Amino acid sequence: MHSFGYRVNALVTFAVTILAMLCAMASLSDNLNVPSPTAEVEVLNINWFQRQPNGNDEVSLTMNISANLQTVFTWNTKQVFVFVAAEYETPQNSLNQVSLWDGIILSKDSATFSIHTTNKYRFIDQGSNLRGKDVNLTLHWHVMPKTGKMFADRIVMAGYRLPEEYR
Amino acid sequence: MDWQGQKLSEMLMQVMLVAFAVGAFGTGYALGSFQTMLLVYAGGVVLTTLVTVPNWPFYNRHPLKWLDPAEAERHPRPKPQPAAPSKKKPVKSHQK
Image (cartoon, rainbow over all chains, first blue to last red; front, side, top):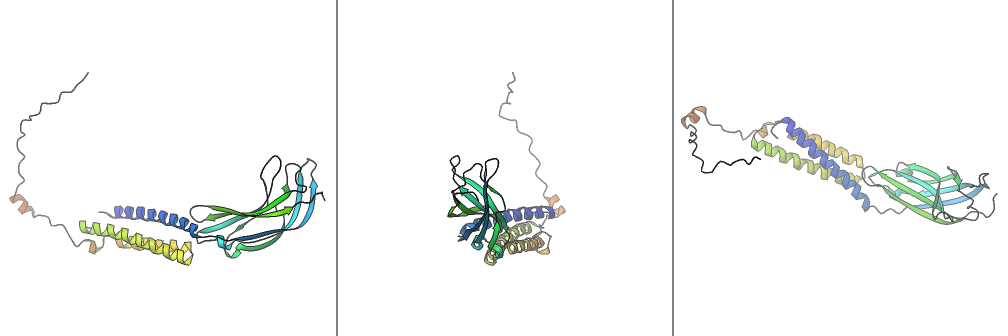
């Protein structure tokens, strides 16, 4: 500490160490937040449901996606990535996930939304398993913090069944 | 900067930074604003720099009192004693 340069060095080193600890504390403080999000995905219409020439089933849906993810946001949240996936079981695979829609929520104010949309990404099964299939429309979200640990969670909305016939 | 000043400067630096960090985390968490935390802490670092890095006069209140050269000449340094013959046997190196 006997010269200007030594004092600057000591100060910067200590300041950055404390800054890292502040960021760690901020990340840990996220654990104190207990989110209580709600979500609902309603299928309004099946636009088409057909078998492609290559044998895969494809569905086009019109959905109403509404959710309230405000409680997911904390002071350490940068953004939340949210997507709706259709999850179903086939004889080959116990879990199939097809992403139907996604979005990025940048602020707590826009974390309550209700969106009327067709599926943004094509809902195609690798095979011909979709007729009469029970599908869980699941809202997943990944919380991207400003510093520290990422969180992910989901709400499963079971009880949607695709029709027995192509249309 | 004298010895006492260096000690004071280091202590001030550590205490101020920790205090500002605690304050910054408290305000940031209370207001729910990460940016506020960073701004408060950045302000604290700048203030701490201004207080502890320049050589302010209050770091020089305990100057070292060196002996006057004339005084030192009156008490000459004792001459080194002629080296007593070593009782230890010289260690032989075992070279192969």
